[in-house]
Length: 462
Image (cartoon, rainbow, N blue to C red):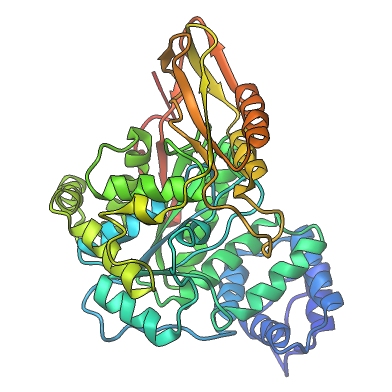
């Protein structure tokens, strides 16, 4: 096996690095740092980058190599420092799903409990939604504020929610663009480095990962999701970042709605203290408790839950969200008057049950594609979306529904769109005369570095 020499100067040329990895060898931090710097500085061409990515895909990267690659990608741009803040710097990352509005509630909750969350989010692609798209349903909201405004928002509201921008982990953008055209997007070591490089650039003290699995997730198989979550925890630890991960179920939409303005409205209702969808609450509070523990705010789960509950009941979390929106250019009274600002689709169509039955299954990806077809999703990052469209009033698997009871309400731009969406939505649901025997819990496993995770519930529940 070829490995870097322990004597004499190390060859840092891209061709030599590609050869070593092609032949199954290991790359040193120095070599990976030089290669990533070459990528960021346009000294490494797309052909060489593509060859390296394919070699990594076929031969793999060790945890040490992944940590070195992650740190090199982090250091390709600005790394934020928060010396002026008096609390831990925390964040979460989700692998994406349908009706996944968790970030919109989690960030102000953690801020209200004493953490700071400089959250860098992404846009939706395919059937999954994106936090930035939900935020842009707010009139005037700036997801790309100037750096001073971003820092002021974190300082004064306790959190901010922005896009990646050009200064954080710029090498990652080139890596991802070439991965997209070289069939290496699903390479786990590259996924890990891509996610963590951006989070490390935020200057975090702690991170929690929401690894979704099921028929609406990118990772359908729970075993693959667990492997990714464990890799993220291990590499984060090797890079000096405290990190845990929760495995969460995406075999049905997480919230009662799917669609950008609709999910924003549901998040605001959660923050105002209106009763949330129980599975959504389970995921939100589970991730928040992890962050409060990781950040040294409160390690005891029951006391942490009390802190979070009080943040909702006193209105502190909602006030934080309203402050963040105003600081980033949105209306100051969004929390109190969401209907005044969030776009409403011109056509609404209620989909009703055709017979008495239990809802026993949802093709969650298909529900996401319903929203996409209505105009609420995109194929390419530059595509425009309609924030008003989507579905609301979604039922939960296991519920008994009677004939003519609502299954959802479709929000569409035209009557033809609504009719097509109803057909697609009905095809995504499965009914039976008997309830499902078992359902996976919304949060069913916890992962930590070294395999030190603890069970947080049965993978399946009666």
